[in-house]
Image (cartoon, rainbow, N blue to C red):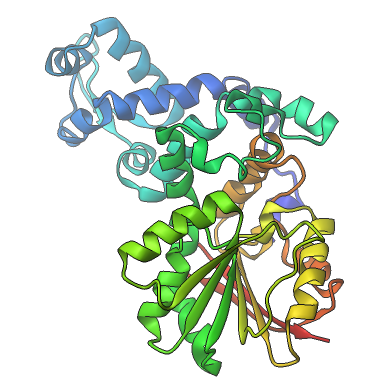
Length: 364
């Protein structure tokens, strides 16, 4: 893991500065979003070398000089914006785009994270303390009365759904090209996609291998969406769905899978529930069934920013998603799966640009 997890070398002055950044984080987050969404960063980006004044930005965008001014000054404090050098101290300030501003404006990862935090997490995050105390996603109440976000996913407002799925797919989808050759090395004919969601992985599998048949196992709301997407792709003859809550004991999983796939699924459950899910898979798997788990593990990341994003995502699980899960470390997730009767056979780390881990298990 990263050295600063073990050492505290920051100076007192810098530490106090960082503490202020945290104290004002809700406001500065909204300032960054406004700079992007109001077109201010885009306009400054057009004048990145020479800089542009607040007055000029305001006129071009039809905004008040005051409004652009307070956002630009905060952008300067956050490092999003920089000042163009000048020898005239009385001349109006000219703003240019800093490196941080460039990523907020152009980087897909930053865009997806920012939209997710705004549309899905922001309002509900105020209930984080209550969620920790009660062990429930108290922030979910801003959207509905469901016990978990997954029960109401298909009923969320359109913009919330859009940002949720963009966030969910952006990460795991980028690892698919590297995961496919590993999963299909043993040529599975029948693959169960547990937590298949919108059928993205199932459709990808059928395009990759003409002989595979996929069964998507998920909650009824998700399987209904999957069925529509599968039908639209003309693959209903190879992809089927089974509505099932994997946490209940009443419903049993079907038999006959050569491979079981769970992509960014087990982080939606507590470690105890993870063990329970694998215990439910156990009787449905044979000794030759490969169980694949694709997860972003925060202690297997190449970059500190990626680990930070995963640690922050855990807070979403706490106050919005379900109140009891998180983004896991490699060791704790593996241990929970092995308690369900399986043994780790292979671990492929650093798949895709988001450093996913693909773990392969078989029955002990």
